[in-house]
Image (cartoon, rainbow, N blue to C red; front, side):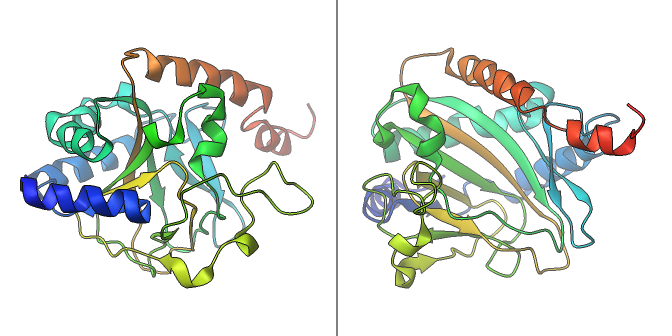
Length: 260
């Protein structure tokens, strides 16, 4: 467990830079259990079906689709549920955020070697419908393997979490335009297995491709300082409707069945 004096310093860094790292929050035995659980989930029959609404895909190095994530994941994994909602992490978050938090959402991402990363964005843009102040929202990265820039670790624009950054000229309501941000403030924290990274909902961030030889596996729960114990259910009720409207997976279904 992180000492109180260290947690105070990490809290200061979080509000100053928009993110902080809680080193070694989870021990090696816990990490081993999380890794084993992720391998189990990745081999559950049907979870890699592109018509499964909890499954998402990314373009792989060969141009095909790579099984990328499970979202949500906590309802099918007591082990990962314990990681995301246990007293160890929740206590640290209460200190950093300055209040008791409830879980908002949680996904498991496995970025295979060669799979591309994600463009610059701010999480709060997708949470505006919650009608909650951005200071009350954060995302956590529970790191299961060593992670750095080469493996496609998350890059942050340090200290750039004061407001929503407009999108590009052709889409001002879209994800933030990196041309409006200072590239000298980009930083990719190097993380060890068991480290936990916490970042503010307005912190601009992106990731590059995984150029390492191993998958980059992380558990990403998000939280809100609130007394609404039904927040997680509300989020996924909304998310299911969104995914159905966008027909997740159907483009691949019809591509495989041209006669339909």
